[in-house]
Image (cartoon, rainbow, N blue to C red):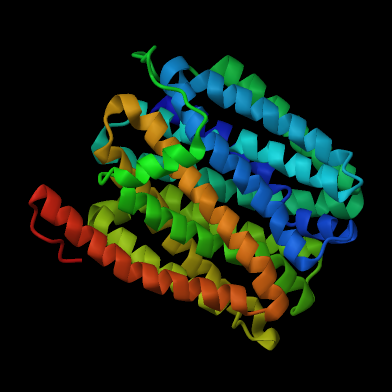
Length: 398
């Protein structure tokens, strides 16, 4: 394996582990500060709003100045946001912290562009799966660490530990991560006009459908991600530490799929079939998450976890790989940044709906997300047919 991919994998892993620490903690910190369930969902909304605003910006900056400085600056911003979280003794400061975390986390587009710089098109789905595997491993290590630190040391130390991980990450980037973009475009446009950029992106038929599919998928998935800690505590009686272990199980399953199985799956089925199969599996996993019987929570809860991990591992990297095939080399960062922004829009819509749906009925975020994914399946079939018509290929059997 390319040494640069290994180093980038470790960089993303440490970054996502610092992010993952907060997953089982923020909902309960927000509740302790007096937030309603709807406002708990909004803590994820503000995070995603800033990811949406800064995703294309960081991607475009990386096209002009290189991937390495963008990744480093964003990690530093994340570190500042984590320190701010340690001093968040009111709901306003908590929201500001989550907003800054969104600014820093928008650098995933630069990391994906780094991969496209050093990987030929036919291997990009597998290599981009490393980003997903790093997410998965971050979910393995981060949430249990966050749950344990929160339980034994309190809220402030959650932020201190995450900021310390950012410091380690910055050192690794400085010493070990080389620049990947050697033919930079000094005239690459850098605009901070996310709404205009979104409208313009939807007019580009090369990318429009992929952006929309990613948006809908992330919205449905983030509905589950926002509501499930509350469900596990309120309906199943899990503690914060036990919830963090459940997230670790999700992360482990995702890492196995994206880090170990995706290459074989891509060779066996191809990106198009993986998108379709992944959509169906995610729909099943979302529905089953809210239907696990209380008496058989373990091992029954691992059935939806397996569906979600396998579906996510098939769907998201395959969409990203299809996107990079449509883009010119000089616009990879910008295009992947816009893809990240559509994902952020999904993370705005999903948590916003999840908190309010959960207040109405605890199962509604999960069954609603599943229904959304089933509708997306038919949209994907139409998209693949339209793509075949544009490029003159025989429709895929899958």
